[in-house]
Length: 164
Image 1 (tube, one colour):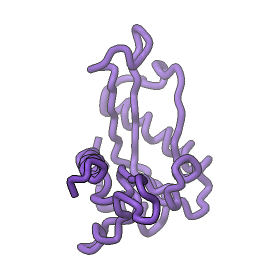
Image 2 (cartoon, helix red, strand yellow):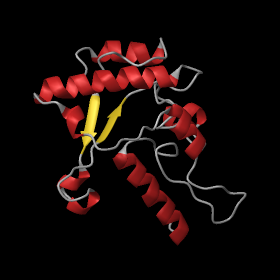
Image 3 (cartoon, helix red, strand yellow):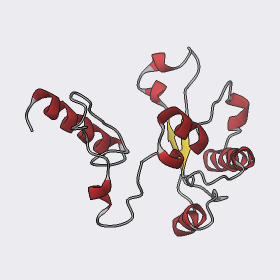
Image 4 (cartoon, one colour):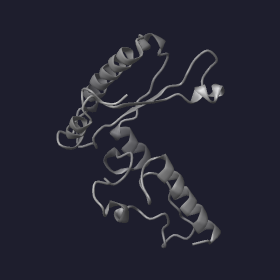
């Protein structure tokens, strides 16, 4: 569910370091393909929006406002009252992402990839000083997003197998 003004959404993120009142909303419901991912008669919705890095914002207030905006957008676009169907929910924000993964300022995709050289600054897939230590995921080479994360796993697998 795209923002009405995608460029403005990114101005909020990068310049104002806050969340757009009209965020792009990504929804994935794995229980549609794998019914056992949710209890019988229910679905599991993974809902994600773009947020800025953690620079000390009032995340509790931002989360409350964003949740309201997300629910209103889903209701409007799907013509339903989604909130009455929510049994439980949890939130991952830059604070928890940083605490759980040590990703700098809670960046989901690691270093910003806003220029042509960004890919060359990503963390490599191995550590020469520690034999057998490999890294995969969005914050290492080649970068964020499912296809690139899978590519990083393929690179690490190849390194482990000795097929440099």
